[in-house]
Length: 358
Ligand SMILES: *Cc1c(COP(=O)(O)O)cnc(C)c1O
Image (cartoon, rainbow, N blue to C red; front, side, top):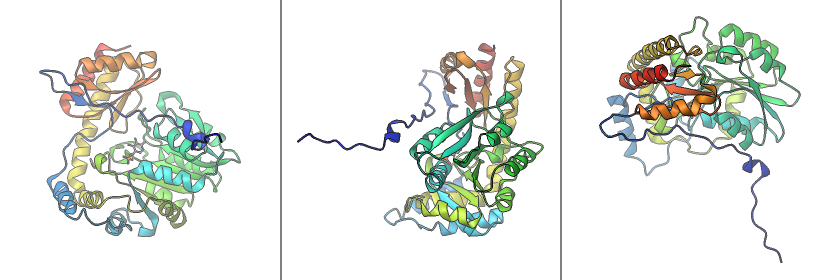
């Protein structure tokens, strides 16, 4: 009898690898900075840390599976009923959940490219087929081309605003026109992981958009502006049927007690956290101006990162960054994403931009 080995679904072998931002190589005599994962460089606020430590004391118990207190805090903060919410282990998990809830094998998912590298992974995991639509000039979503890419097979469209890794945000007018063009049975995910950093003249109001459109899901995260990347907590806002579908496919007890407590404490400390965001935005604008002054044709930056369109020199620029004691995130053949970190790290990013200017 021939031995049979277990075989995962064919799509499993096709899952692209996630390339995580690397930590810096230690350099004797030089403080190094990790500018490769769009993390928040500030340490936790004392009150948030205290809440997490206190929550750790009951680690022998399962967390509240209904994330009740977090839903109540989010409901009060966002002005939406709790049945419009779904929390999960980061907003990436919500995107996985959305795709698993809505896609059958072979269904199409339209998204911009280059965009968030988790999208092709999540789409492949769901057994769906990705339909990448090239970015327009300036690293922007080409929403007209994305609407035109919707077919009978399309179940979901992913809109990343601001776009990771290039930086520009979609405008409210642009999104409204797009939603008018997309059939109402197609779910449109508006990934607002960096919404707190947006300073555009015509910003998207994700929550209002979700309240106005039964096919829109807005995803947000505590990982970036709120500095809880290590705790894994994000949330979605959508009308009750979509929110219920997201909750239905979630892993039971996914969001830990510590993460729930830290997220609630962060909402309570929001004013202080958003001051830090303002400081990061000021640093971002400083870095972007310097990068452009150095001769880079860098796109608008609405997140906590700046894009260097280095093309074929991406890996070279990243290697030069290592020499300067910073780690950035190269995308081979395309460009380099530089996260905004501590001012000294940002100064080195500017030095990098000058040294490698086109
Ligand atoms: C960082 C990021 C997320 C959020 O990640 P989580 O830590 O899983 O919440 C989602 N979308 C984009 C585009 C991101 O860059």
